[in-house]
Length: 348
Image 1: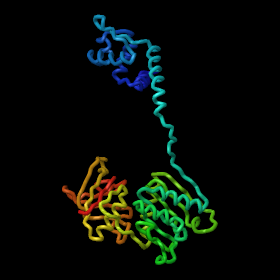
Image 2 (image 1 turned 30 degrees about the vertical axis):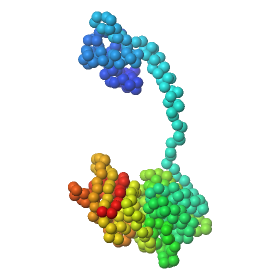
Image 3 (image 1 turned 45 degrees about the horizontal axis):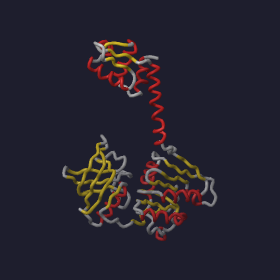
Image 4 (image 1 turned 60 degrees about the vertical axis):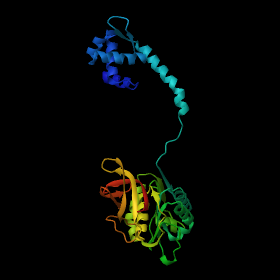
């Protein structure tokens, strides 16, 4: 075994690199004066005394301070190994007592062929949502999930809903189902995301036709959900027509979902309410934690008409602080000054 490998293994037992060098020097000499060890290990004599006291406490060496000059002797390797083994055995019961056997969460994909099962999964995911739901669903199937959507809205979840394959938007009953509802006369895939973590993708035929060979995918993967939500907002949302927008929520209010913050700020400002925002978050370029507060002087968004964002997934606030205007974005912000984790909105 070479010195590098031996050093790495010894360091796993809590020895510093200098402690390892000192110990290996003593092994080579058997017993030596502090000055000899210091010269061979490339450290000071005072440091050798300090290190050897630590090594002696852990059973690696013995310090003979009754001799003049003081000598240090390496303990036999079998004695050192036996002590290390004894220490490991001693901590095992305590570690096992505290260890909770929890199976690691796995990223899952489930392929579903049944329309009934797809709708069941949609209801389950919506029922478990905490902050945001984006969903497109055929008008024919909306009544089967309407209660779950209404309950989510009641819990304070942002629900952005596209009802597709709508023959008559005026006859569409969507009261209480979503924060914002859009309708589209065309058929479109069923797309669901909840809290940027779980969702469903299903072709139009599966939820409309009585018999279909098409399949849906249910996923629980944080890397995929934002992509699906981005496609929903960027490709399908602008093509549909706005048919209903809920009233703004009471103030003051705190939001961890930034799109919900932007929607509420938009709705309140359109009623003439002057808003103040307190934002906790980080600076995207260096991840520095910070807090900004001030009057909301501008909102960029594409959730309700008229949209004024520069690209489909842009949702941001401009806050007038004492140091000047600061732009605030949500998770993954890259053009704004601050990536928000929590925003409090109140009347200015």
